[in-house]
Each structure stands twice: as structure tokens, then as C-alpha cells.
Length: 527
Image (cartoon, rainbow, N blue to C red; front, side, top):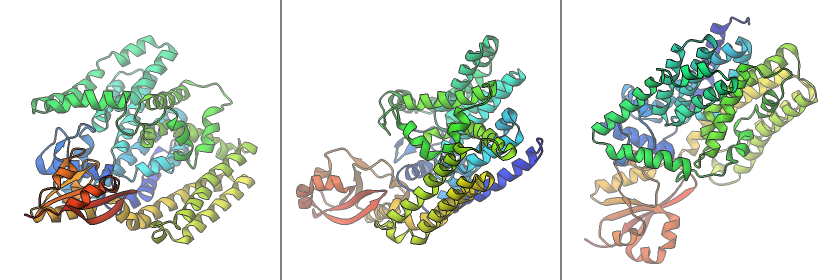
């Protein structure tokens, strides 16, 4: 395609997003424990009880997440007539499509149409991006606004037009409403670092101290002010004191060491990570302004999330687009000029093939021998991926770059589609809290008082259709001394107090969800 083939590229990218991500939308699965189940309950309370300004979970305010993502899910759910995984995944899919197109637009401005197209296609098939595009979370929406903000900054800098900076702060404000302060930090830090590096003092003042920043202040401040005036002062205080400061300094959620992402990146960026090392780390020409901005975007963001105490692999998602743009240039050089096809390419192809398909086939072959996966994973799938991996190794040795990239791209799509349309439905009983939630609803309907103990807040509330009160630590024993009482707790907690609990309650049910075992205890006390 010619350099000006943006429209054709855009149409192809839209079609690829349909092909790649719609299997997740139509996956026959429930909301899975824990995050998806909690977000479903937040959405239920928002719609049923009108908590539009402040999110609530299991009957109590939930300052962990701002409301923008849930507003969108509520809109789609109301159009569909029910709160379902599919309704929420439509929002994720649209966010993924927006992120893909915004990445292409930025990449085209920086590298040209063909490198941007190739890099964006590679991003579509990156394991991290692929997984985040098919789960019920707000991270893809955050990534969309971050990329739009990065594009707006670059256009503002390149064209020297301040109106683009207003777009930057609008996108950053919406990113904050989608996920939190990282929505501003991800695009703001590399932009400021870039201007400082270039000693663009005048442009730095226009960007960081100009009127555009008022857009973010008015947007986020307006939401917080509305919540405060609506009587949610405790929510606002908790948001700043516990959620922002607490997660940054001493995480109560997902704590991990500083090097967490360095260890994880080679796997979540498959199948392209082996090529990324050379695409980012070695260049035959000096680093230009555009590449400096992309490198700062990734490195500043990585340092930021590494310094924050709470860590989760999904937090890397907004840092994938700059890598994709750099990778696109590298892939274009390989395909158009047949450069970089020496021994290094052979090693990269071997690593990509073995880590992606060889490791995948080995994992599938192993887990199919372990209950309950022995009933979910057919043996032929492991063989297929091992054969595909062997074929990719041959292509790497023969240095058939175009065919190798196609195999990696299509093979990743095949694994994803099979996982979403086949495996997810069969794995549903092991990840969904539906059975426990519906049991809670049945017990409550008979007049029994049902509570949880030591269980993550809200993971059963959506399928129970109600808030499920939680017992404080140590209250389970005295609680069960009275009749018509039921407790759902971890089997570990039950085992610790088994001798005492067995005198007061009987086990009426057991299940395992997302690797954790739960027991349902019913009081023995008579009325």
C-alpha cells in the first residue's frame, strides 16, 4: 500500500479487531471471580439503586475505581435489557478498537503509514493486549484515553498549536475518571520529560502551565465536587487517603517487588518480545525526537508502576502502544528491505516460536492431566500448537520473515479464539461464583441470615442479587450459635476452627472457585 493508505489500513484494523476480539464478547461465560464479579455487583448497585456519582460494592461505597467505565457498561446493559458479561465486554471491545485506531494514528504521524500499520497489527496479537481486550475491566478504556492524550501532545508539539494540548487534558481527565490518577501520569510524565530533555522551555510552559490543564481540573474536580455535595464526603476522603496514597506507598492490594514487571515483560509481550529487544535497543541511526518520545513514554511509565507498591501485569497495558510503533518500523525494514535477516533474526524467530507455541503446547499437555482441566482440554490442542511451533521454528531457520510473522499472528488468534469460544465455557464452573451466589439467594429466600467470612468483598453479591453482609474476623463462631444462620467461608478458615465450628454448624456445601476452596456452613441451633 502507498504511504497515504490510511483509510485502507483503518478498515483492515477494524476488521482484524472484529476477528480477534469478538470471540471474547460472545464467549459463553459468566462474570469470573474476583474482579469481574465485583465490577458486576458495582454495576448492579449503580443501576438498581442509582449510585451514579459514587461506586458501591456489596452495599458499601467502593472508592477503588472511578465511575466512568461503569457508566458506559450501564448504558450498554440498559440497551440490552440486562447486566451480562457480553454487555460489559462490548465496552471493552470498543475501547480496544479505539486504542488500536489511536495507536495507528500516532504511529502514522511518527513513522508513516506502513510501519504504523504493521506495528499496530502486532499490538493486536500481543498476549497482554489480547487478554485485556476480552475481560471485564476498565484498563483498556484507560489505555484508549492515554493513547489519545499522547497523540494530542505529539500533534501539539509538532504543529506548535495549543489547542491540541486542550485535547490532551480532556483525554487525561477522562482517563482519570476511567481508572484513577495514572490516567494523567502515564501521558503527562513522558511529555514533560521530553520537553525538558529538548530544553523547550517556552513549549513546556504552554503545555504544563497553559489553560488546557483547566479542562482536567474542571472535569475531575466537577465529579468530586458533585460527589461531595451529594453527601459522599467519606468516599472522597477515602479516595485520597487510602486508595491513592495507600496503593502508592504500602499496597494493600497486589503488593510485589520493584523488578516484578522486568520479569513479566518477556511473557506478556509474546510473541513479539524477542523482536522488540532489537527494535527498541539497537538503532543504526541516531535517536530522533519522535523515537525519544516513544522511549520516554515506555520507560517513564515502567519506572512509575514499578515504584508503586501495588503491581499487576495489566498495569503495563498503556505502555504497549509506544513499543508497537517502534516494532512497526523494525518489521517494515525486515519486510520491505529484507534487512536484519542475519543470525540475530533466526534467534529471535526461534525464541518467539518456542516461547509462544512450544511453551503453550507443553503447558496444555501438562494441565490436561490435572483435574479439573483433564475434562476441559482435549489432547489434540497441545499437539496442534506444538506442530505449529515446530513449523515456526523451521521458518525462522529458513529466515522466511513474512510467513513467520503470519504464522505468529494467525496462531495467536487461533489460540485466543479457541480459549474464548471453547475452553472458557467449560472452565466456567471453576471460575464463576454463580453457584454460590444463587445458593445464597435461595437460603435468603427461606428467611435465613446469610453472611460471608474471610471472603473478598462482593464476589458473590451479583449472582446473589443482593448485598451479602461480611463478618469481622473472629465473629464466625458466635454468629453460628444462633439458629437459621448460614456462613460462606474459605475452607482454610473452617479447617483452623473445625473443632469449634463442627459443634455449632454443619457443612452443607463445598466448591472451588479460581483456585480457592469454599465451604457453606449452616447453624445447628434450633429455633
